[in-house]
Image (cartoon, rainbow, N blue to C red; front, side):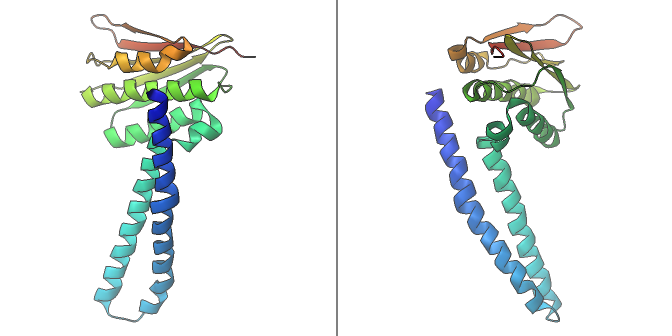
Length: 198
């Protein structure tokens, strides 16, 4: 089911990029070519034209963000760590929550199936924590040793995360999830996946 959903997301992202996105880009190019023809024309017409073009540019940006969220090209092209950096930046801008990232060990790529599962699991954990976040930052730590990859998320939130979804994502790859919390200490959600460096 997870594989089928990922494949559907890939097709949807591709359709957005190659269909709607390209047509909007073409419309924007046409508007850009028309702009010099309005010079010297009525102020109201030029203002409405600029508003229309700004709206097209805004929608293009939103479509690019949506396509990236559905199927991050960074994940396919460069791997988990660059995709995670991008996701944290986007999530921080949208939510206003302070998100930091620490990298320990090698960031050498894993098999794409593991990277994809780990990325979606990370999205699930961070998305849940940010939705319930009331105050304080979240710290993400990525650690790679010769045998495993570990991702830890630490923060003050004690709200539940859908660990069932996270476990199901990682189970085919032998992944494990643990949660630790204590009074006056950050809650830490950690996942670990075997990923030997050959």
